[in-house]
Structures are given as structure tokens and as C-alpha cells.
Length: 332
Image 1 (tube, rainbow, N blue to C red):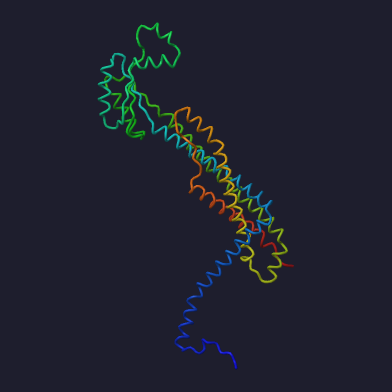
Image 2: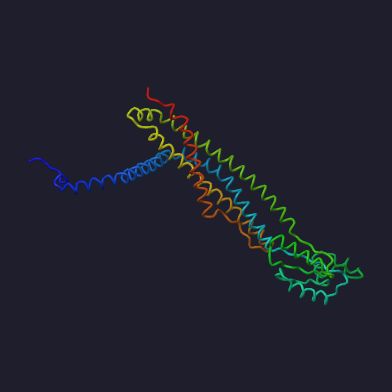
């Protein structure tokens, strides 16, 4: 008795339907097989790194240091920006009144200015209060006793409703036009200078980041080049049995990817450790100034960007190395 496949006994129409269904499923099957092969190669390349832990750890550490330096400087600039933003949010306009303005007139002016558009709050420091505070903090109490009259004027400390520089300048210009006002002082000029310095530092960080990124590509490329030379005989045998360059190139690309991701993780750990070491002194210094400022580390998006950038640089360095050296290896 001979074997007869079951699908031969089916009706012709059903056979044609099954064949069409197989043709429709063929691209899906090829795509699934392609994904499985890549997943296998991805895991196999990680296993190869695991079997050489010391060499892999040194390579990852070097890449991590190269990525940690620009990442750490970026975190530092972001913290300085946050701190300057907090200072900018506490912008004050000091309005010094004329010497002949007494306390009652100063209080009337305080009430008038507090109702002015663009003003959040107004605090009056009378001439007597200013002198008492200066006597307490300066240590020149005995010298102040010989003065015939109080040399200090009354001051209005105005908090603007908006921290926009143009709005604050407009408010200061309006206050200068008051007859009782002698001088208006803005303490925001140094913040603008600090913003300019931060902009220059940010541009420098971009340049340094580009240089370190090039360094990561070179490091990974050199590591993969050595790996290619160590596996020269394996590559020759693979080519003898018909393996394509794309098939041989795949594990090296995934190895570079793992190097980059590992370097990104190492950089994240280094930056976190540095912030942890600096967190205590910074919090203590902020407490001395009555501020609750605390260092902020990498956000989730920043960590993800660091890992993606590290993986991309590792892949790129591996691709350059494979493109340069794989073609030189041919079976004799």
C-alpha cells in the first residue's frame, strides 16, 4: 500500500484555495524567520561577550567613561539652568525713594504701586528699618551713633508678576517716572550674563560630545577589528561553505551594539555616582542660603537617549570595521 498525501484527495477548488493561502502566508513566514535569525544572532553575540568577561568589561568601561563625560556636563548645565531659573523666578525690583519722603508718604506709595498692573507684591522697608538692619548686620553701630540723621532712604521691594525681562524693564521704567522715586535697581543683569555663559558652555558641550562620539566609534571599531582578526579562520571556513558577507557581518554588528549599550549603562552609573557624591555638599550649601535646591540626575528620557546613542555609536563603529576588514579575508 502506497502513501498518498491527504491534500491530493481534496477537491481541486480547495487545493487552489490552500495554495493561494500558502502563497499569502509565505512573506509572513519569511519575515518571521528573518526575525528569529536576528534574535538568535543577537543572543549569541551577547553570549560571546559573556564568555570573555574581562576583555568585554574593559571595553565597556572605556566606552562608558567616554559617554559619561558629555552626559555629566549636560546634567551639570541643566542643573545650573534650573538654579538660574529659580533665581530668575525670584526677581525683585528695588525702588529707592528720595530722602525727603517720610514713612507715611512711603506707605501711600506702597499701596499705589501694589495696585499697579504687572505687580505681584510690594514690601516697604522704611528708613528706620533699613538703618536698624544695617546696624545689626554691619557691626558699625558705634559709628552710626555719631551721625546727625539717617542717611538711608526708604525702599520698596517690588515683585513683578512676570519674570519676562521686557515686562520687568517696562515696570522699572514706569516706577522711575514717579516723583517720589530716586533710583530703581534691577538685579537681573548678572542672570543675563549667566545665561550667556551657559549658552557658550552648551555649545562647547555639543562640540565635546561630537568628539567623544567619534572616539566611541573608533574604540568600538578597533575592538571589532581585533575580534575579526581573532576569528579569521572561522570566517574563512564560513565563506568556504557558502556563507554570505551579510551573514558573517551580522554577529559583529550586534557585538558592537552590545558594546554601545553596555557603555551607555556604565555612563549612567558613573553619572549617578558622581551626582550622589555631590548631592550632600550641594544640599548643605543650598541650605545655608535658605534654598531647597537639589541636584537633578538624568531623567528617564535622558537615560533612554544615552542607551540609544551608545548602541547607535557601537553599531556604527562595528559597521565601519566590518566594511573595512571583512572583505580582506578570503579563503585560500
